[in-house]
Image (tube, rainbow, N blue to C red):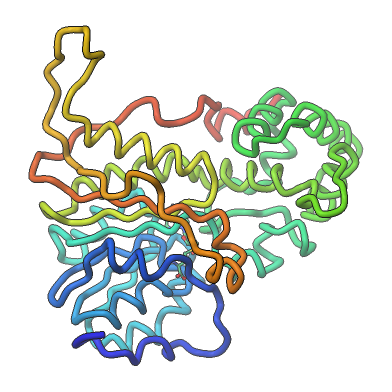
Length: 343
Ligand SMILES: C[S@@+](CC[C@H](N)C(=O)[O-])C[C@H]1O[C@@H](n2cnc3c(N)ncnc32)[C@H](O)[C@@H]1O
């Protein structure tokens, strides 16, 4: 702890709303220092932001697309005495959000992907098959909901979404069961969808709930989580200072693959095979700091089971100018708007 003080752990107190994962490595890879400016692009319950503010006399721009997360951060904004700016936005806009807040370049960007425990534990968000609620799943509250997708999408689109984003082997059976069920009555609740999935996907004792993968797929699709991630990585490249740090914590293989591929392409110094003539390539914009992803140790997993699947990757920005869009990082799926046009 340095000049930042350690008063932040207690702010916005009460029981922990979300236990942050891999906090120490996040702070270390960000190289948090006095005078530094950091974007916490997934503010959530503010776990990383508290740690940054407590580590040094640094400033944080906290972003979250969930208005509830931003509202709950109000106490922390006050306690931070001008060192924390909270913005309700999607992290795909993190560079323009930071510029609008008066910061043209930053020392670090951190992304902690997925949903928070607060969101999962709120039945009205419709994110959990364990709690009955409306089949919503939107993190931000705007745009089409999971119920819109489930009740409108063609069977083939549904199967593809569930297979690709949920890695569900029984995706066709699930899609067929959804189409059959909605012909009787629209599917409106998480319990209704969980029951439909459980009628097709059998699970043995000790397995994850049969609806886990289908719910994950729909949540990722409804919130365009992978598209957001690609845009955020590119936005981070645009807003980071030379030597600034990018840290991304992901929770499933699709996200981790995107982070890994993006960083590997942006850090490549040569193109083509070693037998082919060398192609001219723009200078690398990042150097990778984590050859292998950093994972939680047994102690952290015992304390916070969510940490089990966390993978942290970090990279340092070079002086090279930011590049344009990096194609080919996303799985091939129809757009949400097209899916809603239906069968
Ligand atoms: C895993 S939680 C972050 C927890 C946080 N690190 C903490 O310590 O409390 C992820 C958060 O990111 C937010 N989020 C997810 N996708 C987003 C996006 N595309 N833009 C902005 N916020 C997003 C969610 O609303 C959620 O609050």
